[in-house]
Length: 121
Image 1 (cartoon, one colour):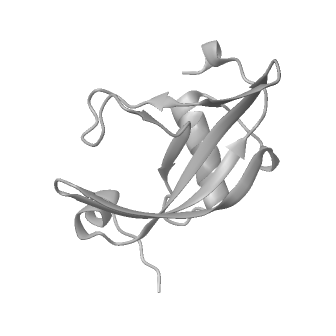
Image 2 (cartoon, rainbow, N blue to C red; image 1 turned 180 degrees about the horizontal axis):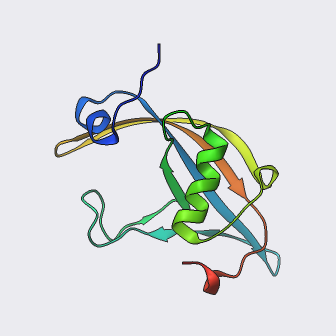
């Protein structure tokens, strides 16, 4: 059975909910780099910490890949094609922090296309 509820409710109740994680992997001069995003100082959970390249919740009615593409554009200003996201698996995560009980099932993707970091937002 599936149902939709606001993210705030899912985080309060601990209901499992879908999310996406996109790791941006770059090869430069024969070395592999992973682009990390620094969380805002204003975030309630883990402010100022480094995190996955791009991540977010799957909106009601959306599919994982559609949500991954949306998160890349919203968070980084990066417009990817669906075929450019390499699905590498699902990840379960369950943690509590103060009043948040986050129980996620995340689709994990790798994005390997060349990017210019100075153009990311």
